Image 1 (cartoon, helix red, strand yellow):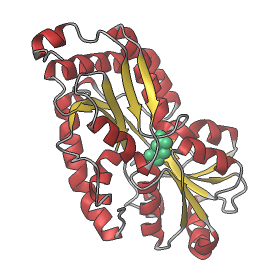
Image 2 (image 1 turned 180 degrees about the vertical axis):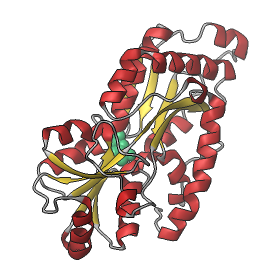
Image 3 (image 1 turned 180 degrees about the horizontal axis):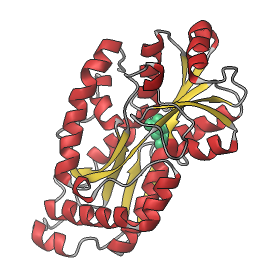
Image 4 (image 1 turned 45 degrees about the vertical axis):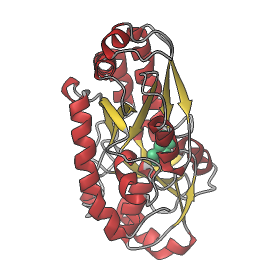
Length: 312
Ligand code: MLT
């Protein structure tokens, strides 16, 4: 194959469809965010963006696939906070997180909600805390595997309540939600992008959010901090990455397209309806995502080590 020099190569980019890897099952929160921005980016770039859902190992399987992909701009990864936590959680990660990717930009930071099956007994979050402490050995918590946002939130919940819960891993909280709705699992901490509709419909119970302030979407839902669980204060930030070696001009073109997608009022409205908001343009840049990833790896490393949680 002829080795194209970056300038010539980047000028015509993109010339064919792009694959956006979502490292969780279809129908979950990450998939929802990806499809929202991919639709607008595709229109701007003039090429189809095909979503490829690669679930498994809490998102690290899909991330690993992109780490190994051709650095030609035609494979991108949309992933969230799990990119940072997996660096500490996994002892044999298939890639060097800070050396295997290039950066496009931040997409959105999504709140999490502590939820339970519809007929869960406690009426409010303080009662939920007491009930879970008293019945921990008979309760199950659903998540999307070690490294998922739902895993991180569940870990913080178990740490705060000082109880272990039997966890049931899924390839994403899309499939996990099916079992929560069916009452097959008891508790799940998941993003508003996946729980808003069910909370409004009353088909699952919501107890608390992980944001510093209450959400306009659910003004009656207390923050976890209001009930003394200050450690449960974090948002699920999402970023777009390309494989190491992808030309800077390509990453810049993708960042421009992402910024246009995030400025689209339809995207802002859709995100607001799901309890979140687009990242500001200055954050939808390679530099901002790189800085966020580095700071979040440093932030969560001691928390995860203190919890003694890891995967081999
Ligand atoms: C997560 O917990 O990280 C979510 O399950 C991701 C997803 O399914 O989109």
